[in-house]
Structures are given as C-alpha cells and as structure tokens.
Image 1 (tube, rainbow, N blue to C red):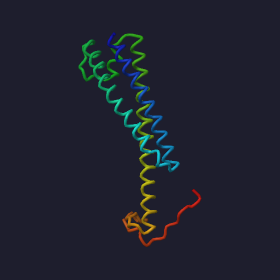
Image 2 (image 1 turned 45 degrees about the vertical axis):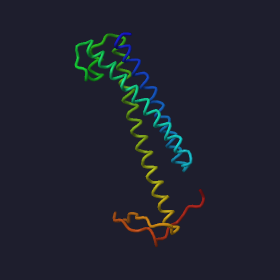
Image 3 (image 1 turned 90 degrees about the vertical axis):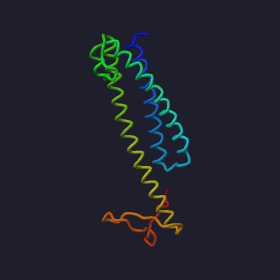
Image 4 (image 1 turned 135 degrees about the vertical axis):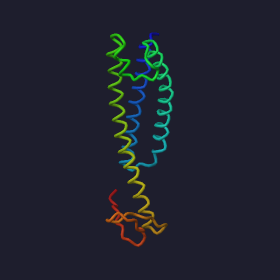
Length: 162
C-alpha cells in the first residue's frame, strides 16, 4: 500500500472513531441533562472503549505518518499540513480534507466534553446540597461573596415537579 494511502486509511478510521465519540458524548450530555444517572456508568464505559480504540489507531496513524514523511525526506515528526504540501493529487486533497474534518471534530469534542463536565459538576453540587438539607451531612457551598459557608442550617427549596 502506498504511504499516503495508508495514512489516509488511518485518518479515515480516526474520523470514524471521533464521530462515535461525539455521539457517545452527546448521549452522555442527554443523560446528564435528564438526570438519568443510572445509565452513566454504561455510557462512560462505552466512551472509555472508544478512547482506547483511538489510542490504538493513533499509534498506527503515527507510524503511517512517519513512513510518509520519510518517503518525502521530511523529519518523522512533520505535521500533516507539511505532508499535504508535498504529496501528489489526489492524496494532497484527501489528506487536507481529513485534516480539516479532524480539527472540526476535535473542537466539537472539546465543547461537548466541557459542557458535560459542567452539567456533571452542577448535578454533584445539587446532590450534595440535597443530602445536606436532609441532615445527613454538612456540605460547604459558596455564598454570594464567593466565600465557603456550611449549608447546614440554611433553607433549601426543592423543586418537586421533577
């Protein structure tokens, strides 16, 4: 297999895995938004399996990238953009498209992960507040000035419509 073709194949596999990761992160976000914590361990395991598969493909992609770089007299740590400039068509266009799509997926994954993290953090804080309001334990919360204060003894209103 030609080095550029091998790299393109590895990048395509990476794209597919990152698309699956976006999907699983979206599902995780929906579960968090719906307060369906029961299913979070399952989606977390699925996300971890995809991340592990990405690690395997990343090793193969790095090897294919290094092989293509050596073929064109570039250092083995050359960027994909540098290689795109040296390979012939149709590979330069194809590798360029892979690069742009991967950058887009990376940005999307970062945004979703950040959002999910914030939702999970808020859910955890709400859970602690509810437990503290029931007198099971004390939990420190932030007051309007940003200082920590114990939640015990403060009134907490629960929305019972959920």
